[in-house]
Amino acid sequence: EVQLVESGGGLVQPGGSLRLSCAASGFTFSSYSMNWVRQAPGKGPEWVSSISRSGSAIYYADSVKGRFTISRDNAKNSLYLQMNSLRDEDTAVYYCARDLKSGSSSWGQGTLVTVSS
Amino acid sequence: DVVMTQSPLSLPVTLGQPASISCRSSQSLVYSDGNTYLNWFQQRPGQSPRRLIYKVSNRDSGVPDRFSGSGSGTDFTLKISRVEAEDVGVYYCMQGTLLITFGQGTRLEIK
Image (cartoon, rainbow over all chains, first blue to last red; front, side, top):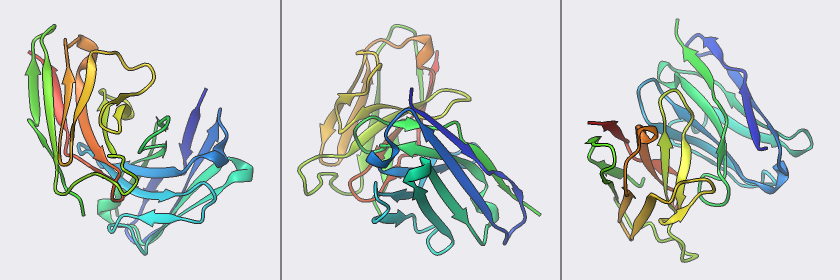
């Protein structure tokens, strides 16, 4: 069974940093591109970042470019999101997701990030 | 950026009746490989989004055949042939042709 389990969320002050992790199991992690998608309270999903299977191709939404960094460790079956210079508008549930575009899609349950003073 | 516009934003439907959601993109979603990366997601209350349809009309594994997708270019439609109680939730279209963008969502409720 495919499982994606996010962790690392919490309360952080504006300007602070957090590192999210996503532990993958039940499939060959290195064979899939991966994504981070966030959803602010009461809003629709917003794509944040994607990373290719090897990590050689990385893409970011304009809203996080220069502040967030996506990475992966295929040996540890893990996906990461380093978030710096956090703003109030970054408050959201952050989901790890596989195969958004085609293939076999799967999402985690999400981890809540709250940016507030 | 590609803007995805859904309509209606709210959709009250009687059980057993059909439902239809429209999604329009601000530019063609045909990619250079010939595929059109337009997907549909369902989000039930309190749950993560779940993909129903990928590349316009392909149903994901386990998705009931009452769900169907159609369209081309910039105009796409998700249809539910007979709405059931478990279909309540918010439906989102998503384009993956030029980065990734979601529509604003359509809330389906039982009338």
